[in-house]
Length: 351
Ligand code: NAP
Ligand code: ZN
Image 1: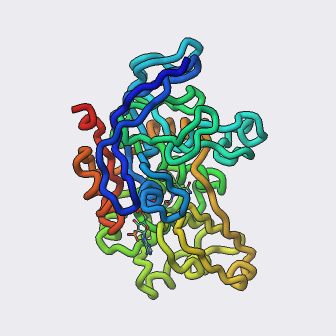
Image 2: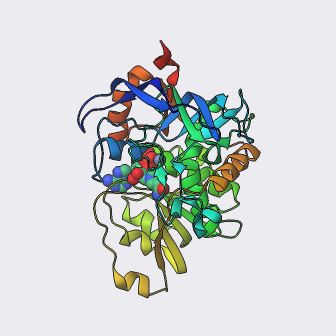
């Protein structure tokens, strides 16, 4: 029998409503499940898009949060990968068909039957709507849970679960590394992780930012070359790129960046502005350039990026906030006023 567990959570009841404490239900731990006491959860711009219903399809109340780290507090009798007390993480994916070729290849994010997002998704297996990491605890099948290396600062590691994997996966796929010029557009949560990770892979990293104050900070983050993208002269004089990763969350001019690619270069979209983007055919035809996209990363690769970050001593630059500051944080994120990721200390939910 599946009785339910009452769980305190933070959610909103409409696109413009403030966050408030809600009571949600978590399933009891099934034989293959892990229950995690959530300690920290990052705030990604996708949480903001979803709360504001930018993409359509939001079901209220919504409990966002998909950069989850915590401690295992219960395990089902068949669980083999985790034990009580382990540090554990959950990102975007909490279920998939596990049978299609993509799932078999560890690329659950491209599951042919559609994977289950940790929040605001219909839970095909267990019913109801999924609720994310802005909560006291979460129950997830062990196959969708990763280990957090002990050496990583825990709140700073939370953003690796989305921002980190979302930039690591395409950087690896398009072979960023020594001898490659990699451009990163936007220095937000994803962008600042992309600088650190591309640099650790050995690439020559150029960042394109609209914010002077971030341009001043980008060397410290590891960028080799910094371009204020609002300055035409700087755009004209920067080196041509093999790969450009576009992390921008709002409508912007893609063509001016495609123009910065070398022959055979690729511009990879990871940002998800709600608006359509326009691309000039001439701009990609001349120079055999590619315009492509990439969605988060699979579970095995999420473990891989966590291990990579531990090896290279990489965590996010975060502003740690308590549960009472979440409304203000969403406002500041909307106004592009965070360096570079908010992480919520979930301990406040227990009081
Ligand atoms: P973020 O922290 O808000 O960063 C976005 C950055 O884009 C900003 O810091 C800013 O950088 C730049 N920007 C914002 N508005 C702009 C505008 N109007 N014109 C030009 N540049 C602008 O957001 P995030 O959490 O990194 O997420 C970025 C995007 O990726 C979101 O759309 C999110 O939904 C999406 N996302 C996709 C995936 C995926 O799997 N593909 C995963 C996670 C997130 P500067 O100040 O440096 O210009
Ligand atoms: Zn995200």
